[in-house]
Length: 194
Image 1 (tube, rainbow, N blue to C red):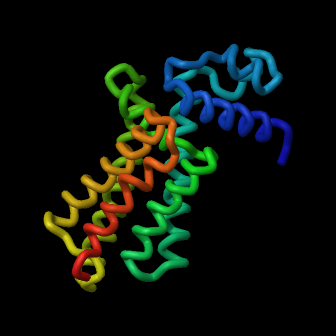
Image 2: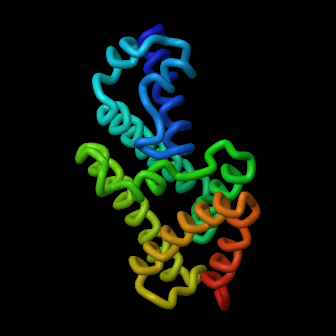
Protein backbone atom coordinates (compact mmCIF):
# COMPACT_ATOMS: atom_id res chain seq x y z
CA UNK A 1 0.00 0.00 0.00
CA UNK A 2 1.39 3.42 -0.85
CA UNK A 3 1.85 6.24 1.67
CA UNK A 4 -1.15 8.21 0.38
CA UNK A 5 -3.65 5.42 0.98
CA UNK A 6 -2.05 4.56 4.33
CA UNK A 7 -2.42 8.16 5.51
CA UNK A 8 -6.05 8.29 4.37
CA UNK A 9 -6.74 4.99 6.11
CA UNK A 10 -5.07 6.25 9.30
CA UNK A 11 -7.20 9.40 9.16
CA UNK A 12 -10.38 7.33 8.70
CA UNK A 13 -9.47 4.97 11.53
CA UNK A 14 -8.82 7.88 13.85
CA UNK A 15 -12.04 9.62 12.81
CA UNK A 16 -13.96 6.41 13.45
CA UNK A 17 -12.68 6.12 17.01
CA UNK A 18 -13.37 9.81 17.62
CA UNK A 19 -16.92 9.52 16.27
CA UNK A 20 -17.58 6.52 18.53
CA UNK A 21 -16.18 8.46 21.49
CA UNK A 22 -17.98 11.75 20.91
CA UNK A 23 -20.12 11.89 17.78
CA UNK A 24 -19.84 14.10 14.72
CA UNK A 25 -19.24 17.35 16.58
CA UNK A 26 -17.02 15.74 19.20
CA UNK A 27 -13.81 16.05 17.19
CA UNK A 28 -11.92 18.36 14.87
CA UNK A 29 -9.19 18.03 12.29
CA UNK A 30 -6.79 19.25 14.99
CA UNK A 31 -7.68 16.15 17.06
CA UNK A 32 -6.98 13.89 14.09
CA UNK A 33 -3.75 15.69 13.23
CA UNK A 34 -2.47 15.26 16.78
CA UNK A 35 -3.45 11.60 16.99
CA UNK A 36 -2.18 10.56 13.55
CA UNK A 37 0.92 12.75 13.74
CA UNK A 38 0.27 14.85 10.65
CA UNK A 39 -0.60 18.45 9.95
CA UNK A 40 -4.16 19.64 9.36
CA UNK A 41 -3.44 20.57 5.72
CA UNK A 42 -2.55 16.91 5.12
CA UNK A 43 -6.00 15.89 6.30
CA UNK A 44 -7.59 18.50 4.02
CA UNK A 45 -5.58 17.03 1.13
CA UNK A 46 -7.33 13.69 1.61
CA UNK A 47 -10.68 14.96 2.88
CA UNK A 48 -11.34 18.61 2.03
CA UNK A 49 -14.19 18.85 4.54
CA UNK A 50 -15.35 17.11 7.68
CA UNK A 51 -18.57 16.20 5.89
CA UNK A 52 -16.57 14.46 3.16
CA UNK A 53 -14.45 12.65 5.75
CA UNK A 54 -17.45 11.35 7.70
CA UNK A 55 -19.38 10.49 4.52
CA UNK A 56 -16.43 8.36 3.41
CA UNK A 57 -16.18 6.84 6.87
CA UNK A 58 -19.86 5.84 6.95
CA UNK A 59 -19.75 4.57 3.37
CA UNK A 60 -16.81 2.32 4.19
CA UNK A 61 -18.48 1.24 7.41
CA UNK A 62 -21.54 0.14 5.42
CA UNK A 63 -19.33 -1.70 2.92
CA UNK A 64 -17.60 -3.50 5.81
CA UNK A 65 -20.99 -4.45 7.26
CA UNK A 66 -22.15 -5.77 3.89
CA UNK A 67 -18.99 -7.85 3.56
CA UNK A 68 -19.41 -9.12 7.12
CA UNK A 69 -23.02 -10.13 6.49
CA UNK A 70 -21.99 -11.85 3.24
CA UNK A 71 -19.39 -13.76 5.25
CA UNK A 72 -22.00 -14.83 7.79
CA UNK A 73 -24.33 -15.99 5.02
CA UNK A 74 -21.52 -17.93 3.35
CA UNK A 75 -20.32 -19.60 6.55
CA UNK A 76 -23.68 -20.24 8.23
CA UNK A 77 -26.50 -21.61 6.10
CA UNK A 78 -29.39 -21.44 8.57
CA UNK A 79 -31.18 -18.16 9.40
CA UNK A 80 -31.20 -18.72 13.18
CA UNK A 81 -27.45 -19.32 13.12
CA UNK A 82 -27.00 -16.15 11.06
CA UNK A 83 -28.96 -14.10 13.58
CA UNK A 84 -26.97 -15.60 16.45
CA UNK A 85 -23.72 -14.79 14.62
CA UNK A 86 -24.81 -11.19 14.06
CA UNK A 87 -25.67 -10.71 17.74
CA UNK A 88 -22.55 -12.66 18.75
CA UNK A 89 -20.41 -10.32 16.67
CA UNK A 90 -21.66 -7.31 18.62
CA UNK A 91 -21.43 -9.15 21.93
CA UNK A 92 -17.74 -9.85 21.24
CA UNK A 93 -16.99 -6.34 19.94
CA UNK A 94 -18.61 -4.67 22.92
CA UNK A 95 -17.00 -7.12 25.32
CA UNK A 96 -13.44 -6.55 24.10
CA UNK A 97 -14.03 -2.86 23.20
CA UNK A 98 -12.85 -3.44 19.62
CA UNK A 99 -16.07 -1.85 18.34
CA UNK A 100 -18.05 -0.70 21.36
CA UNK A 101 -20.79 0.99 19.36
CA UNK A 102 -22.24 0.94 15.86
CA UNK A 103 -21.00 4.09 14.10
CA UNK A 104 -24.26 4.49 12.18
CA UNK A 105 -26.45 4.00 15.25
CA UNK A 106 -24.43 6.60 17.10
CA UNK A 107 -24.58 9.10 14.23
CA UNK A 108 -28.31 8.47 13.65
CA UNK A 109 -28.90 10.30 16.90
CA UNK A 110 -27.40 13.39 15.27
CA UNK A 111 -29.28 13.18 11.94
CA UNK A 112 -31.08 16.53 12.30
CA UNK A 113 -27.76 18.41 12.39
CA UNK A 114 -25.62 16.28 10.06
CA UNK A 115 -24.70 17.28 6.52
CA UNK A 116 -27.04 15.64 3.99
CA UNK A 117 -24.38 13.39 2.38
CA UNK A 118 -23.59 11.89 5.80
CA UNK A 119 -27.31 11.45 6.56
CA UNK A 120 -27.85 9.67 3.23
CA UNK A 121 -25.10 7.16 4.00
CA UNK A 122 -26.50 6.50 7.48
CA UNK A 123 -29.96 5.89 6.06
CA UNK A 124 -28.48 3.54 3.45
CA UNK A 125 -26.85 1.53 6.25
CA UNK A 126 -30.12 1.24 8.16
CA UNK A 127 -32.00 0.19 5.00
CA UNK A 128 -29.37 -2.45 4.27
CA UNK A 129 -29.40 -3.88 7.79
CA UNK A 130 -33.19 -3.84 8.02
CA UNK A 131 -33.46 -5.59 4.65
CA UNK A 132 -31.03 -8.29 5.66
CA UNK A 133 -32.66 -8.91 9.04
CA UNK A 134 -36.07 -9.04 7.35
CA UNK A 135 -34.80 -11.73 4.98
CA UNK A 136 -33.34 -13.69 7.92
CA UNK A 137 -36.71 -13.59 9.68
CA UNK A 138 -38.59 -14.55 6.52
CA UNK A 139 -36.35 -17.56 5.90
CA UNK A 140 -36.30 -18.59 9.57
CA UNK A 141 -40.08 -18.41 9.87
CA UNK A 142 -40.52 -20.41 6.66
CA UNK A 143 -38.19 -23.11 8.02
CA UNK A 144 -39.75 -23.04 11.48
CA UNK A 145 -36.48 -22.19 13.24
CA UNK A 146 -37.60 -18.67 14.21
CA UNK A 147 -40.94 -17.86 15.82
CA UNK A 148 -42.40 -14.47 14.94
CA UNK A 149 -45.16 -12.58 16.72
CA UNK A 150 -45.16 -9.81 14.12
CA UNK A 151 -44.33 -9.55 10.43
CA UNK A 152 -40.69 -10.24 9.46
CA UNK A 153 -40.19 -6.54 8.73
CA UNK A 154 -41.52 -5.42 12.13
CA UNK A 155 -39.46 -8.09 13.91
CA UNK A 156 -36.37 -6.94 11.98
CA UNK A 157 -36.89 -3.30 12.94
CA UNK A 158 -37.53 -4.35 16.55
CA UNK A 159 -34.37 -6.45 16.72
CA UNK A 160 -32.28 -3.72 15.11
CA UNK A 161 -33.58 -1.16 17.62
CA UNK A 162 -33.01 -3.59 20.49
CA UNK A 163 -29.42 -4.29 19.42
CA UNK A 164 -28.68 -0.57 19.19
CA UNK A 165 -30.46 0.09 22.49
CA UNK A 166 -28.50 -2.69 24.17
CA UNK A 167 -25.29 -1.01 22.98
CA UNK A 168 -26.49 2.22 24.54
CA UNK A 169 -27.36 0.51 27.82
CA UNK A 170 -23.97 -1.21 27.96
CA UNK A 171 -22.34 2.18 27.50
CA UNK A 172 -24.60 3.97 29.98
CA UNK A 173 -24.03 1.39 32.72
CA UNK A 174 -20.35 0.95 31.93
CA UNK A 175 -21.10 -2.76 31.83
CA UNK A 176 -20.28 -4.66 28.64
CA UNK A 177 -22.28 -7.63 29.92
CA UNK A 178 -25.46 -5.55 29.76
CA UNK A 179 -25.58 -6.19 26.00
CA UNK A 180 -25.96 -9.94 26.57
CA UNK A 181 -28.35 -9.35 29.47
CA UNK A 182 -30.69 -7.60 27.04
CA UNK A 183 -30.08 -9.64 23.88
CA UNK A 184 -30.08 -13.20 25.25
CA UNK A 185 -33.78 -13.10 26.19
CA UNK A 186 -34.57 -11.64 22.77
CA UNK A 187 -32.95 -14.61 21.08
CA UNK A 188 -34.79 -16.97 23.43
CA UNK A 189 -38.11 -15.32 22.56
CA UNK A 190 -37.50 -15.74 18.85
CA UNK A 191 -36.69 -19.42 19.17
CA UNK A 192 -39.25 -20.45 21.81
CA UNK A 193 -41.20 -23.40 20.51
CA UNK A 194 -39.14 -23.70 17.35
